[in-house]
Amino acid sequence: GNSVTQMEGPVTLSEEAFLTINCTYTATGYPSLFWYVQYPGEGLQLLLKATKADDKGSNKGFEATYRKETTSFHLEKGSVQVSDSAVYFCALANSGGYQKVTFGTGTKLQVIP
Amino acid sequence: GAVVSQHPSWVICKSGTSVKIECRSLDFQATTMFWYRQFPKQSLMLMATSNEGSKATYEQGVEKDKFLINHASLTLSTLTVTSAHPEDSSFYICSARLDRDGQPQHFGDGTRLSIL
Image 1 (cartoon, each protein chain N blue to C red):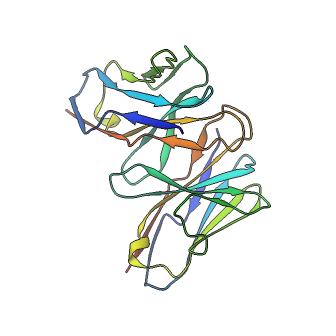
Image 2 (cartoon, each protein chain N blue to C red):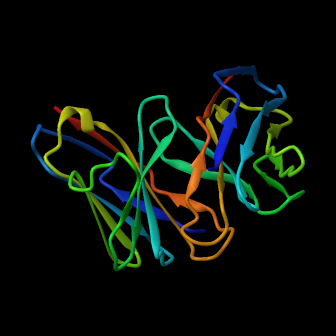
């Protein structure tokens, strides 16, 4: 079955530091890949997505590239801000059908001034 | 963009009460909606897939009679926690997606349910 593995948190960084959150997956076929962000007490918001190999998703300074050869979708940001503090979930969904989403366990990011 | 509204955002009630949570897609139609449960500091657990006009598909281990799902229209799905008990206290989140391949799920803001 499908699975998503994320690096364990929490990750604590100073403001303006470089961020990488690793994500690898196992899936049948050619899934779409997503990063969602959850701020305290809120639901999930889509941060970015990629639907095929070598696609790069980007939003708000965050980037992730769909690497089929390494089955990875690592999240990166060049300079984090305090407002980026949240929990980040890597996720995948197979195309077609109900597109059931499989989530990673989430990585909590804390950015300190 | 696609917006999903979930209501209420917070519920506190006595043990034995039934609680209904609504999930609406505000600017798109969703044949399929999803209900998740999230325990503190944990990932989302898919409870069921809600299908418009037909019965929901429940994940293994989720009690169908406990968590009643109704998806009566293309923009509304409801989750009713029947005879809720303290162990049902959790954060419940719904999602919906446009009916096209590759489209992401859009999530509601969640409902925090506290059973006393």
